[in-house]
Image (cartoon, rainbow, N blue to C red; front, side):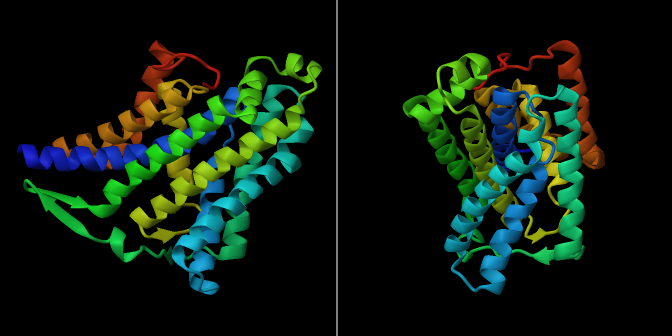
Length: 295
């Protein structure tokens, strides 16, 4: 493999890893606050792509307006899931919340098949994301540049929210000691709902970029990116936002380079991600970044 091909594959890996990181942040924020692994996170991603699809294809809205509305609607959808499914089992044993999350995931997938149909639908990709540039022998797909840029901007907004706003301070306080925060008069349920909204909005942004990258959507499309993002969150240290980003990038780059260097193993790229998860759980269960609370 020559240098230009290596750089091209590295860029592809960063682009894929950025998507994993963006989705993984939603996992890690929810876990960091209420210790819940929201297995429906990948399906929330799927719902967001249908919001954008109907906005563009059915209601003929400009694509950028459809994307913004899809992100806002998905954030609202995340709040509704928290209110309807997770809040009633907030104080139940942790296994009850885990089973509820799995149930919500299956519900959304099957509801998606009933409502949207199982047939894949083509997803719109704006013209400026279809361009390909060449630099020093490296062919750069414009979407591969925009994905890390958008991820970095959204990550900056998340850190701004967490460390420069009262809502972010409340989120970090709830992550540290929920009972004490309640005694101080903070509405914990509202803070948790806002966390679901932020996590769902990030999943929506990641899902829409995923749909643009592989331009088709279907009701089961959230399973693999959702699981990969979960793996990325665990690799980095679930509950730690820096760790989610680190794990996402590491997983994305490793996957792409594995396929590039060893094309005969391309069919095992998904299996490799889960082998990596098992190794991390065996030798460093807290993940590479270690800490298990947000921030």
